[in-house]
Image (cartoon, rainbow, N blue to C red; front, side, top):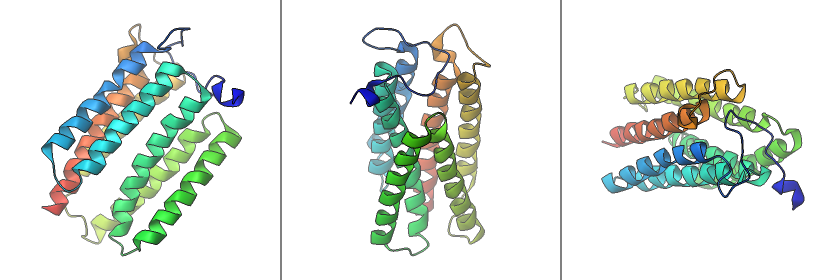
Length: 211
Protein backbone atom coordinates (compact mmCIF):
# COMPACT_ATOMS: atom_id res chain seq x y z
CA UNK A 1 0.00 0.00 0.00
CA UNK A 2 2.97 2.33 0.59
CA UNK A 3 3.61 2.14 -3.14
CA UNK A 4 0.31 3.92 -3.84
CA UNK A 5 0.78 6.50 -1.09
CA UNK A 6 4.02 7.88 -2.47
CA UNK A 7 4.15 11.20 -4.34
CA UNK A 8 2.69 11.46 -7.87
CA UNK A 9 4.97 11.15 -10.89
CA UNK A 10 4.02 14.50 -12.46
CA UNK A 11 4.80 17.83 -10.78
CA UNK A 12 2.98 21.12 -11.41
CA UNK A 13 3.52 24.78 -10.57
CA UNK A 14 1.54 24.71 -7.34
CA UNK A 15 3.73 23.00 -4.79
CA UNK A 16 2.05 20.47 -2.51
CA UNK A 17 1.80 21.46 1.14
CA UNK A 18 1.68 19.25 4.21
CA UNK A 19 -1.94 20.16 4.88
CA UNK A 20 -5.44 18.72 4.73
CA UNK A 21 -5.66 19.93 1.13
CA UNK A 22 -2.20 19.67 -0.42
CA UNK A 23 -2.86 21.90 -3.44
CA UNK A 24 -5.79 24.17 -2.51
CA UNK A 25 -5.86 26.32 -5.65
CA UNK A 26 -5.96 23.36 -8.01
CA UNK A 27 -8.48 21.63 -5.76
CA UNK A 28 -10.82 24.64 -5.82
CA UNK A 29 -10.64 24.87 -9.61
CA UNK A 30 -12.34 21.46 -9.87
CA UNK A 31 -15.61 23.12 -8.87
CA UNK A 32 -15.99 23.93 -12.58
CA UNK A 33 -16.73 20.23 -13.25
CA UNK A 34 -19.33 20.10 -10.48
CA UNK A 35 -21.10 23.22 -11.74
CA UNK A 36 -21.23 21.92 -15.31
CA UNK A 37 -22.37 18.47 -14.16
CA UNK A 38 -25.22 19.90 -12.10
CA UNK A 39 -26.32 22.20 -14.95
CA UNK A 40 -26.42 19.27 -17.39
CA UNK A 41 -28.39 17.11 -14.96
CA UNK A 42 -30.90 19.90 -14.34
CA UNK A 43 -31.42 20.58 -18.05
CA UNK A 44 -32.27 16.95 -18.67
CA UNK A 45 -32.31 14.94 -21.87
CA UNK A 46 -31.35 11.48 -22.97
CA UNK A 47 -27.61 11.92 -22.44
CA UNK A 48 -27.80 14.30 -19.47
CA UNK A 49 -27.32 11.59 -16.83
CA UNK A 50 -24.26 10.24 -18.61
CA UNK A 51 -22.52 13.56 -19.23
CA UNK A 52 -23.64 15.16 -15.97
CA UNK A 53 -22.55 12.22 -13.86
CA UNK A 54 -19.21 11.91 -15.64
CA UNK A 55 -18.50 15.63 -15.18
CA UNK A 56 -19.14 15.33 -11.44
CA UNK A 57 -17.08 12.13 -11.10
CA UNK A 58 -14.16 13.65 -13.03
CA UNK A 59 -14.29 16.70 -10.78
CA UNK A 60 -14.39 14.65 -7.58
CA UNK A 61 -11.52 12.39 -8.64
CA UNK A 62 -9.44 15.36 -9.72
CA UNK A 63 -10.20 17.08 -6.41
CA UNK A 64 -9.08 13.95 -4.57
CA UNK A 65 -5.81 14.04 -6.49
CA UNK A 66 -5.14 17.70 -5.69
CA UNK A 67 -6.23 17.32 -2.07
CA UNK A 68 -4.33 14.16 -1.13
CA UNK A 69 -1.37 14.34 -3.56
CA UNK A 70 -0.61 10.63 -3.71
CA UNK A 71 0.21 8.26 -6.54
CA UNK A 72 -3.09 6.44 -5.92
CA UNK A 73 -5.09 9.63 -6.32
CA UNK A 74 -3.12 10.39 -9.48
CA UNK A 75 -4.26 7.03 -10.87
CA UNK A 76 -7.84 7.86 -9.87
CA UNK A 77 -7.60 11.21 -11.65
CA UNK A 78 -6.35 9.53 -14.81
CA UNK A 79 -9.06 6.87 -14.46
CA UNK A 80 -11.75 9.55 -14.50
CA UNK A 81 -10.32 11.02 -17.69
CA UNK A 82 -10.13 7.59 -19.32
CA UNK A 83 -13.73 6.79 -18.35
CA UNK A 84 -14.89 10.05 -19.91
CA UNK A 85 -13.08 9.61 -23.23
CA UNK A 86 -14.14 5.94 -23.30
CA UNK A 87 -17.78 6.99 -22.89
CA UNK A 88 -17.45 9.31 -25.89
CA UNK A 89 -15.85 6.54 -27.93
CA UNK A 90 -18.60 4.16 -26.88
CA UNK A 91 -21.34 6.52 -28.07
CA UNK A 92 -19.65 6.90 -31.45
CA UNK A 93 -18.83 3.24 -31.99
CA UNK A 94 -22.39 2.25 -31.13
CA UNK A 95 -23.46 4.19 -34.24
CA UNK A 96 -21.25 1.85 -36.28
CA UNK A 97 -23.49 -1.07 -35.24
CA UNK A 98 -20.92 -2.64 -32.96
CA UNK A 99 -22.65 -4.80 -30.35
CA UNK A 100 -22.95 -3.39 -26.84
CA UNK A 101 -21.47 -6.53 -25.26
CA UNK A 102 -18.36 -6.46 -27.46
CA UNK A 103 -17.86 -2.75 -26.85
CA UNK A 104 -18.15 -3.06 -23.09
CA UNK A 105 -15.75 -6.01 -23.00
CA UNK A 106 -13.31 -4.16 -25.22
CA UNK A 107 -13.39 -0.99 -23.13
CA UNK A 108 -13.00 -2.84 -19.85
CA UNK A 109 -9.99 -4.69 -21.23
CA UNK A 110 -8.54 -1.47 -22.67
CA UNK A 111 -9.01 0.31 -19.35
CA UNK A 112 -7.22 -2.43 -17.39
CA UNK A 113 -4.33 -2.51 -19.89
CA UNK A 114 -4.08 1.30 -19.80
CA UNK A 115 -3.83 1.43 -16.00
CA UNK A 116 -1.21 -1.36 -16.01
CA UNK A 117 0.87 0.53 -18.61
CA UNK A 118 0.58 3.76 -16.61
CA UNK A 119 1.83 2.00 -13.48
CA UNK A 120 4.63 0.32 -15.42
CA UNK A 121 6.07 3.34 -17.26
CA UNK A 122 5.00 6.09 -14.81
CA UNK A 123 5.99 9.69 -15.63
CA UNK A 124 3.79 11.13 -18.35
CA UNK A 125 2.62 7.66 -19.46
CA UNK A 126 -0.93 8.40 -18.31
CA UNK A 127 -1.13 11.54 -20.41
CA UNK A 128 0.28 9.73 -23.45
CA UNK A 129 -2.27 6.93 -23.12
CA UNK A 130 -5.08 9.43 -22.60
CA UNK A 131 -3.86 11.20 -25.74
CA UNK A 132 -4.10 7.95 -27.72
CA UNK A 133 -7.70 7.51 -26.54
CA UNK A 134 -8.41 11.10 -27.62
CA UNK A 135 -6.95 10.45 -31.07
CA UNK A 136 -9.16 7.37 -31.40
CA UNK A 137 -12.20 9.42 -30.46
CA UNK A 138 -11.29 12.17 -32.94
CA UNK A 139 -10.89 9.58 -35.70
CA UNK A 140 -14.33 8.12 -34.92
CA UNK A 141 -15.95 11.57 -34.87
CA UNK A 142 -14.37 12.57 -38.19
CA UNK A 143 -15.60 9.32 -39.73
CA UNK A 144 -19.13 9.88 -38.43
CA UNK A 145 -19.14 13.40 -39.87
CA UNK A 146 -17.86 12.23 -43.25
CA UNK A 147 -20.51 9.52 -43.42
CA UNK A 148 -23.23 12.01 -42.32
CA UNK A 149 -24.06 10.10 -39.14
CA UNK A 150 -23.13 13.29 -37.29
CA UNK A 151 -24.22 16.38 -39.18
CA UNK A 152 -23.83 19.23 -36.68
CA UNK A 153 -20.11 19.62 -36.12
CA UNK A 154 -19.76 23.25 -35.02
CA UNK A 155 -20.29 22.54 -31.33
CA UNK A 156 -17.92 19.57 -31.51
CA UNK A 157 -15.21 21.64 -33.22
CA UNK A 158 -15.63 24.39 -30.64
CA UNK A 159 -15.35 21.84 -27.82
CA UNK A 160 -12.24 20.35 -29.39
CA UNK A 161 -10.65 23.78 -29.85
CA UNK A 162 -11.28 24.67 -26.20
CA UNK A 163 -9.87 21.33 -25.08
CA UNK A 164 -6.69 21.88 -27.12
CA UNK A 165 -6.32 25.37 -25.65
CA UNK A 166 -6.66 23.95 -22.14
CA UNK A 167 -4.14 21.22 -22.92
CA UNK A 168 -1.58 23.82 -23.99
CA UNK A 169 -2.02 25.58 -20.65
CA UNK A 170 -1.68 22.22 -18.89
CA UNK A 171 1.54 21.53 -20.79
CA UNK A 172 2.95 24.92 -19.81
CA UNK A 173 2.11 24.15 -16.18
CA UNK A 174 3.57 20.62 -16.22
CA UNK A 175 6.83 21.90 -17.78
CA UNK A 176 6.91 25.00 -15.50
CA UNK A 177 6.95 27.32 -18.53
CA UNK A 178 4.02 29.34 -17.18
CA UNK A 179 3.44 29.66 -13.43
CA UNK A 180 1.18 32.35 -11.98
CA UNK A 181 1.38 33.56 -8.40
CA UNK A 182 -2.27 32.61 -7.86
CA UNK A 183 -2.86 28.94 -8.58
CA UNK A 184 -6.37 29.54 -9.92
CA UNK A 185 -4.71 31.00 -13.02
CA UNK A 186 -2.11 28.29 -13.47
CA UNK A 187 -2.23 25.89 -16.39
CA UNK A 188 -3.69 22.91 -14.55
CA UNK A 189 -6.52 25.03 -13.15
CA UNK A 190 -7.23 26.52 -16.59
CA UNK A 191 -7.23 22.97 -17.96
CA UNK A 192 -10.02 22.17 -15.49
CA UNK A 193 -12.07 25.16 -16.64
CA UNK A 194 -11.66 24.43 -20.34
CA UNK A 195 -12.38 20.72 -19.88
CA UNK A 196 -15.58 21.50 -17.98
CA UNK A 197 -16.71 23.81 -20.79
CA UNK A 198 -15.75 21.17 -23.38
CA UNK A 199 -17.89 18.57 -21.59
CA UNK A 200 -20.87 20.93 -21.68
CA UNK A 201 -20.36 21.63 -25.38
CA UNK A 202 -19.97 17.94 -26.20
CA UNK A 203 -23.20 17.19 -24.32
CA UNK A 204 -24.89 19.96 -26.30
CA UNK A 205 -23.51 18.49 -29.52
CA UNK A 206 -24.87 14.99 -28.82
CA UNK A 207 -28.16 16.53 -27.67
CA UNK A 208 -28.50 18.43 -30.95
CA UNK A 209 -27.79 15.22 -32.91
CA UNK A 210 -30.70 13.53 -31.17
CA UNK A 211 -33.01 16.40 -32.00
